[in-house]
Amino acid sequence: MKTIETIATVTEDNKLIADVTPDISPGEHRVVLVIEENSTSKKSRPPLSFPVDHYGPWPADLSLRREDMYGDDGR
Image 1 (cartoon, one colour):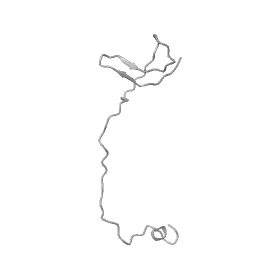
Image 2 (cartoon, one colour):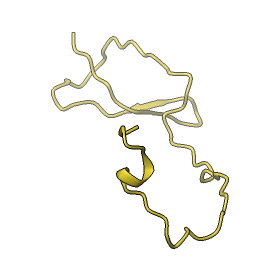
Image 3 (tube, helix red, strand yellow):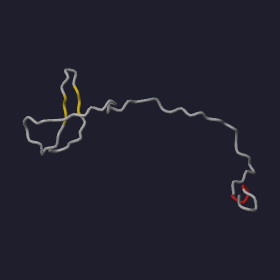
Image 4 (spheres, one colour):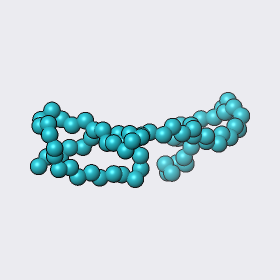
């Protein structure tokens, strides 16, 4: 028994088409299928739209140094 994971296509006339590895011999085989409810095809969705708040330019004298942001005790 071999386990193969592949992508299969179901055609309009309800036929299943799947590629298998070359080590599988031609002929009839007993096959177990697991069909996922979610389609494996990627659906395109619109880009995410995040809100943007504009507060103007940074102050000219703004300092983000640790010593300037925290008190003498480092907190």
